[in-house]
Image (cartoon, rainbow, N blue to C red):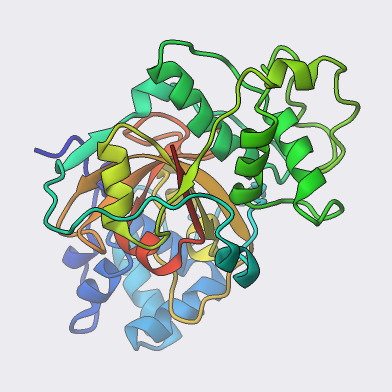
Length: 344
């Protein structure tokens, strides 16, 4: 029996709302967008509404009528639903063909499809409360730090590690020292060669400019040297391989393109529920997070969803059933759009 539901917290399903064209509910389900409240929020955004109308093959006026019908069954009216959302920082780069060809890290291949996996896995309790990267594009350091801290905790040595150190050193080797953000594979190279110092040695400062880390403490490298860790890549779009890693007692760092249809959606933000992009929707950047579990669920795109740990604590996923700051993402999002997958 599943621990939680992808649509947990949903009050009204779009499958019960009048006015949808034939097959409309199935189309919305293919995106993971059956929550009427999330649909209304999407329809209230002019850019998303235009794409949503095209996706459902209805006119903008017809989409508005559908949204009004859905909103009539919700506590807040359609006109009042559009909230001003604060920007949340990103910071993950798409993979380069050169790096993918070079195989910078060892690769963990997928197990045979016939390998039996449990229907659900949840490591959220091991890592505890997520953290907040603030206004800096340092999500990669937070995702890779989560992998490292999970390793230490499951081996009996829980330590709060420094994202500041990992990001600072990663920017020295990623080839783009002036650009905000980086790749997880480059952070993994630092983790293997230098290690990672404790948070108490060099505390993360969310108020600094993205790449303005300040002066590294003189003892940071010596403190880091005792905590080196080798990570491996997974086939980035292979859902079965990622599930197997999670079922085997690991967590998985991942990086994906971000789309406004969920990033700018108030319900998605509160619930921590990521949906698939609309056709031809352009990405607004990339974000790295950490997969900490999964649930097989037939009515979610791809047959289930991954549980994720984000680095926007206090501003995203406050109502997630997996704990504030965590969230969910459909298997199909990973299968179709994932950029990186790193694990122990």
